[in-house]
Length: 200
View: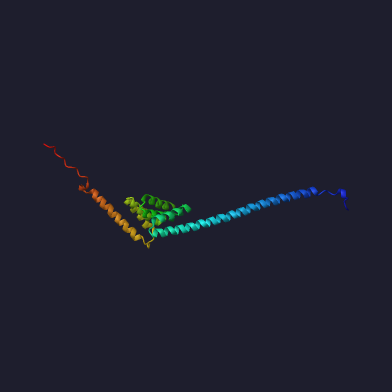
């Protein structure tokens, strides 16, 4: 049985509501799409920036090592300064900066870089070697001996610097013994001036 035309429901308000909802939903989806595209683009840019940072880090690190081996300590320090800007918690960079400063005879600063490397990685054996050299430069031979002993303890048996480290300990002990003997000698103290007799 058919309904008469006047009894049919008017579907125009429903169609209008569905159209408006569709437009709003489409707008939200487009806005979200723009957000997603923007986020993906941002991730790509960050990934690219991170790749550039790593590339520069590797390049500067290699440059610093080459300058160290060439004994061009100022240039090595500049390269490792940049490495530390890019990766401030890289223990190897602190060690190599320390060795650059040893080459420049900047003992306190070298000491600090070696100490920081040890804080970041207590297993960084060459940091103890460098610390010992810096302490010798600071005339702290007992400290130098202790740091070098730690280096020997942590280094591999086939480490090429191990014999040099053992030699350094032997030399520093000999210097300490010599200083101690000089201080213990009765005639090593300051001499008293002889009393002048008053003229007659």
